[in-house]
Image (tube, rainbow, N blue to C red; front, side):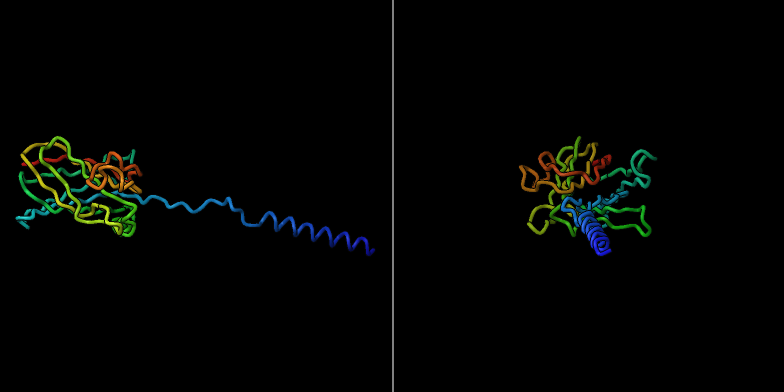
Length: 192
C-alpha cells in the first residue's frame, strides 16, 4: 500500500512538473504589434501671410477606405507669387467623435515626417516650420511659396519611421526617406 501511495505521489508530482513546463513563459512570445492608425481624412489649410482673409482649405476624405467608393478630394487654388502658412491635420472619421491622428503624430514626432511634393508648377516650394525633439523636420506646419501661374498637383505623404538623416530628407526630399507611408494623397493644384 505504501508503494502505491509513493508511486501515486510521484505520478502527481510528475504531472505538476510537466504542467509547469508547458505553462512557463516562452521567450519567443511575440511582442504586441503597434497597429497603424486609420486615416480617413487629410485637411490642408493655407493662410496667405500678406492677407489673413485669404484662407484656402482643401481636404481628402475616404470614409470607406481603399477599394470602396472613390475618395472626395478638393482642388487647391492658390495665388501666384505668394507666401502661405500651411497646416495639415489627419483624422480618423470612422470613429465618433472623429479621432485626431495629428495628436499621435505630434507625440511620436521623431517617428513621422510629412512630405509635400509639387509637380507641374514652377516655383512652388515648401519649408518646414516645425521639428521633432531631435530638431529634424516634422511637417505639420510649414511655409509654401508659389511662383508663376500654372496647373499641376500636390502630393502629401505622411511617412512613419523615415530615415530623417538620409540625404535630402531634412529638406523635404522623400527619395531616401524609407519608412512606410501612413497615407499618400494627391491634390490637383492650380496657381492663379
